[in-house]
Length: 470
Ligand code: SF4
Image (cartoon, rainbow, N blue to C red):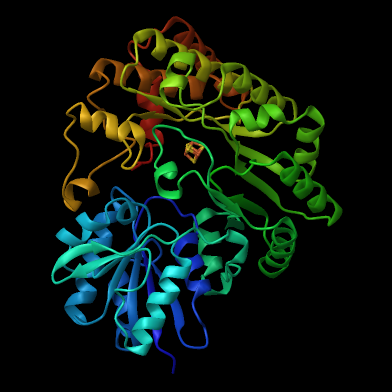
């Protein structure tokens, strides 16, 4: 029996397939090691799932995001260490990549941190463990040397097209379909992004580099996966899917030529969308494009500039019109409470969100409150200005991007923004004859800004409690 590489996906509140663990599992030498992915979101007691594999394990890897997943990652890592103290525990993913030394200084249960892109690094680590070598010469990691956390040399980004294809047979794909309530495959064609948004950690982690899989390979893989799993929908998880007009237009053309039957969704920057033509959008819609995620973040040029978004209000309007015309749903997230935001900026964002929502009842405009994401430019700014950032892993595990307010927005504004968000969704929700009076009242509330006695909100939330997000 081959030794096992155990990879753990900590609990969180969404059911995207664990593409990070899948990518590293697909890249190891399968002649020498058997990768096993365990997902804390699928099993009530993940430690009980891990336990039977521990005797044959060569190491235990965990993919860790900032926020609530840290708590679960720590808990399961500690349980693993308690059962097999000599088994190397490796953390990778966004949070440890940004704080490798801090993680090692605090979490005794973690032996090694993989920084940034993990496929080649984990493959090399596994080979070292299998051969009984030390790992101090492996590039792209942090480890303890004489008890002190140390970084090894940085590892250059491996071109994404040179990495092996994700082997979806390593995932219980049907269980994800069941959780998502649709046969939707998560798939990624690229890593990194060329842009410089000041609230985002991507530029720090990937140094504004982007690397993509060649189009031919994407088309072949998707055709094979669609046939094998009976896929209805593909959710492209790229940071910036529409980086090249030629690439996406060619993809749409090839999907149509192949007669692919699945719909698809992807992220789009407003500037990228505005560079497409009406014919391009028609082609994309014909190829199955059903939904876009377009980060708007703010409704005033001033705040867009502050965020380093490098998009304009005109580009947002253009892309929204294209999406409306071709009946492509869009999610337009907004961030409130950005440092330096004025009441006029808040009003501009609320106005733009209403406009975007009103263009198609399928559109959504989720509202978030600014929290400095570790590794981002704004994070460094607010830290320099004296904002007290979390220090310990326990504090980071309570760092929440959605539900709590921030020092840059008053409680009254949080309430007003939440009210505006709720009534805008309600007012321009799917037209139904029996809901028309409530929808009309909601639209009136949005236009006048009068959210007093929100009885309809209380009733709706009583009947359908909002999902907690973190
Ligand atoms: S928010 Fe998106 S476009 Fe901006 S830097 Fe991050 S990944 Fe790139």
